[in-house]
Length: 233
Image 1 (cartoon, rainbow, N blue to C red):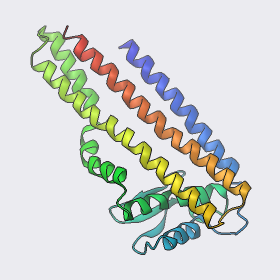
Image 2 (cartoon, rainbow, N blue to C red; image 1 turned 90 degrees about the horizontal axis):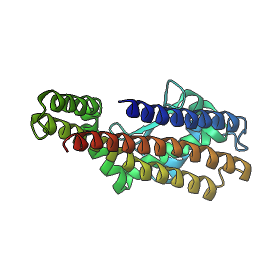
Image 3 (tube, helix red, strand yellow; image 1 turned 120 degrees about the horizontal axis):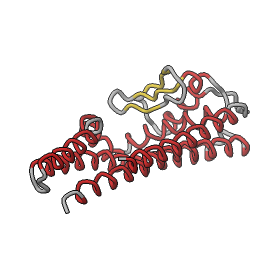
């Protein structure tokens, strides 16, 4: 178990470092005020309008970096800072979340795949590690490598596999949303070159948080797979 704790600790440290870097980037570019004077909410609404999307609402949501697109009720949810602010960070986030709305409207295949996995992952992700661990303990207690404990552990690995798959499918979804956002900001002359550079850098660090999460999920899956199948030998 010590190896697992070291692994989880290492992943948590990298995630914390990337998250802190992301926060510092958004704070930095929050000081780069937009020449056009538009708020995040106004930018979001314009991007939706430019893509002919009329059935998505832009609303404010509490918290910091809590921005997200909800495909169920078709809302672009912008954190209070992004919704009201008029800077490069707000422009980047608002356009990125609208990028997801555009993906939804155009039936982007990776977003469709991720949406289908949401109900499964929401049920299995919280219990997968406990199921694997319980199966391993049962294998050790009974001394039977191929018994019920093994199959319980494998069931846990399958649950964990869905969460890992979800993390990796999220990567193209997030990178594509950022790409759509940056292309629109540039083509519509919504930002100056300095503002664009800030938006691009902020979104780059945001994407890295998802990359770290995906690699962490894969590392955890491989570790537990080794424990299950190694314990069977």
